Amino acid sequence: MAHGNYECCMICDASLCFDAQAKSKESLCPSCAINVYEETGLRVPRPVEFIAWVRLQTPESLRPVLERLGFESCGYPNPVDAAVVEVLSGRGPEQA
Image (cartoon, rainbow, N blue to C red; front, side, top):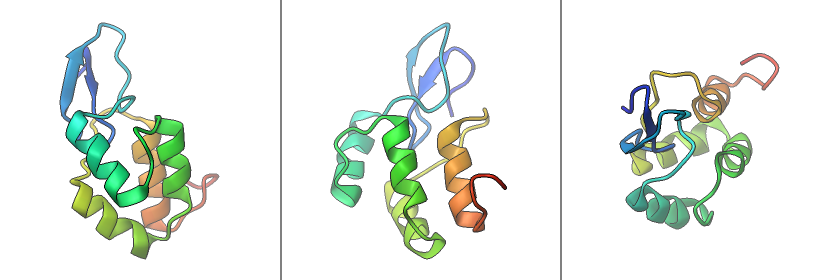
């Protein structure tokens, strides 16, 4: 998990690079970029694109994809993890 001043991967949560203004889960590491494309057809998506894809899934369809991707949540609040929780819990955006 990336902490504080490090960019972290929106899928595996690995630290990517130092950034004093880092935001959680704004980028993809190279291996996750390949894996996301193979699983979803999205080419190095921005968080908003990945979130849109997540929200189109059901809990039953999303869970195995996230497992195959090696998805890890972050200790810092971020919209990617919030969307994943929203779908896996069966709650809509207004309830998450």
